[in-house]
Amino acid sequence: MTQSTWNVALLQMDIAIGEPERNYGKLEALLNQSLQDNAKPDVIIMPEMWNTGYALDRIQEQADPEGERTKALLSSFSREHGVNIHGGSVAVKREDGIYNTTYIFDREGREAVSYSKIHLFRLMDEEKYLQSGETIGRLTLDGIPSGTMICYDIRFPELSRKLALGGAQVLFVPAEWPHPRLHHWRTLLQARAIENQMFVISCNRVGISGTTEFFGHSMVIDPWGEVLAEGDESEQIVRATIDLGLVSEVRKRIPIFEDRRPGLYE
Image (cartoon, rainbow, N blue to C red):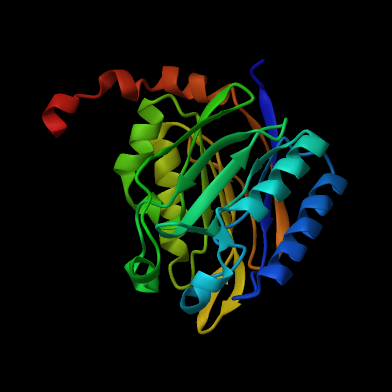
């Protein structure tokens, strides 16, 4: 059965660089808190690389082997509480290297998709330590076709358009997006929502890692580009209720997908 509305909860957390035990403990506390305040969420999302932060010089020792610890935690929680969980992303150790990987689970605790970041961010040396994913992040939650990207991916509009052309109505974006690029963060997310006429649900971290300061401003944006909820720069749970029927309404009102001329773009 397709869901008509979603209550969403964005776990805008501070991340202790290179301290997985501390981060797993904090995440569990925030997950439990998300169930206690106001309306129970239908979807919970967390930030990028929340298990280790960007401790890339120690990532071989600290990444989650095959994502097993992360998957067990998220699957158990989603099944116990009947909530969809977007696991942000975590550092995952596989046989061929370290990946920045998202795991998403449905209300029954089943894995809906795993997605590894395909655009690695050179300004933070990701390409020196991480392997790039090779598939895009398509999934369905509560009958709603959706897509996921990770942080730097939002600078590549081809990816979000491909997801939208595949039917995605919601785009999830976990991130560790720092100062001084707040204007880029807000503008790019709103652009992805407007040009693809979809909801964008983005969860960014807060706090300081080394000399880098992360500003939060996790956002929920509707298909018109209107900001329904936005965090500040503190650790918090950002909440919103979205009317999923708005996507079809907007797409009928301005039929951009019918008016495309892809033959001229290639």
